[in-house]
Structure formats: C-alpha cells, structure tokens
Image (cartoon, rainbow, N blue to C red; front, side, top):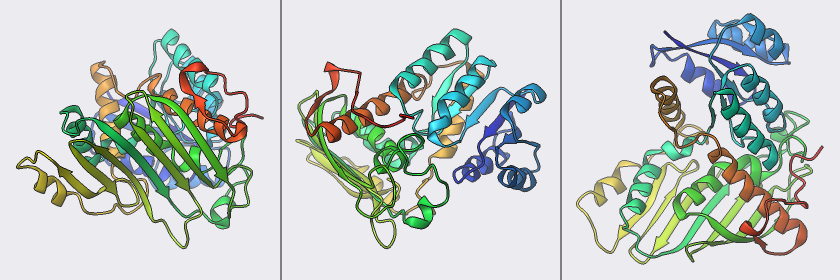
Length: 355
C-alpha cells in the first residue's frame, strides 16, 4: 500500500518538494495532488508533474484520498492549513517555520496528538553530511568544554525577491531575515550547543523595502555556560555569501560554511583521529541552491517513520523550539533588553505573526 502525498502551496520552494516526491526513488509513495489559490501556479505544477490540481483545499480533501499533506504556503497561513489537515486525519509536513506564533505551534502539536496523526517540520540542514559529522563529534565528546557557537546567514534578497509577493517581509505573514532565512540555522545552533539560557539582540532594516528586519545580530548564553552569536542578513550584495555554523571547544574547532551549511571549512581536534582528514576532504562542494542537499534524506526519514511507526527527531514540539527562540530575539530587539528564555513563554513585544 502506497503512502499518498498532497502538496498545499505551489510557490518558490514547492519545486524542490515536487521533484523529490515524483523522483521515483521510493516505490511506496505517490504524489496525488497539488493545491494553490493561484490558478497559474497550480496549473504549472500540475502540468509539469502530471498530477491533478485544485484551487481550494476543501475540494481537494473531499475529492482526493491522501495520507500526508505538505504545507508550503506562506508562513502566516501554516497554522490554519495544518489544522485543517490534522482535523481531517492527515499527517502533516510543514516547511519552516512551523508557524509564526508559539501558541499556534503548541496547539498544532496538541491537536495532532489528539487526532492520532503526526506533524513534522522541515529542517533539512540537519541531514547535510557535514552537519551529521559535526553532531557525531559533539556526541562523542571531542569538543570537550564548549566555548562558543556561531551561525552566520549572509544572503542576498533584493527588491525583486521581496516584490514577488505582497506578504514577503511582513510581520503578519513572513517576518524578516531571522524568521525566513535564518530559521534553519537557529535550529542547528540549538541542536549543536544545547538549550539557550538568555539572549540579547539588535536589528535594522538596512536595504529591503519591508516591514520586518533584513539584518539582525544576537548574543547568546547557553545553559551549559557557552556563548554564541547569531548573525543573519539578506542585505549581502551582490549575491549570497554564506550560510554557516562554527563550534569551538576546549578539544577542537569546526566550521561548516558554503552558502548552505554544506562545505567543511575547518575541522581540527586536539586529539586527532584517522578519519579527520577524510572528513575534511570529503565535503567541499556547494549545492546548486541554498536549499542544500538535505531534503531527500529528510523525506526518507519521515516516510520510514510513518510506515514503520517509529519516532522522528523533527516531530511535534521540536518544530516549536526554534520558534520560541525567534520570538525571544524579537522580544529583546523591541525592548532593548536581554531576555531570559525560561522566565517567560509570553513574548508580548514580538510582532511576528500578529495580524
């Protein structure tokens, strides 16, 4: 019996998902439909991949049998679309961020559990081969005492990009560089360094004609005593420069760079191993786009998890974690003060997701 997928939203990122789900690499799955309120986009996807299209999610749910809905709409609509799928008994895969409000994410997780379905957030960079090796080194204790973790997102998004849709860069539907572009990297920072204790941040809107920020810098204190830095901007010119993470500890240092966290720039430990040179030499190519190479591995892991009914590392509340940190950063920006993460879950001064 095949696991049947439907895609909701045929925008910029959908082509990557469409290509993977129609690649034929997994004989036990099938893409059965797409839906978009924009008929031109829906028809294009339908014609390119020879699948039915709908202009209304209600019609698709009532007309097509499927098991998994893949939510690729603008972020501000993730909650309502995912909730509709969950209440219809469908598993859900959501592109990052899971949604824009913390309470919405928590409600999705609770409702999915109550309906006996599962919800997964796309964080494909965790499946990049260099990232997997970095996590292995951390789990093996090779870094010793962690000192500092840094992420940098230096990408280029000009007026043409923000003009593709009127929701881009708005607080209600998208957010800025932090939420849209840096969400994956924020996830990686916590994934590698552990829970955040406090954060202090500043932002500007330097070049983009948008409501939200195009540039943000944050200083981080982790619960383990290490420090961190978050740098995210879409004001790099003339083109994307890097999407990177670095981890420094008493036992070694690693930097994974390129523009999609795919290229090992530095890999060195005080106690070397015979595999270190192989690791350093084996991952030196950038992918063709900032989406990276991780989507295939992400989908395989989700398919296996559903079919075999086993836990998944990006299921449920895992999608809410980075959203909480993003709101804490906006709280710090808007109050010009540090934010203690555990002291509150109510970030009243964060504009993200407010309509």
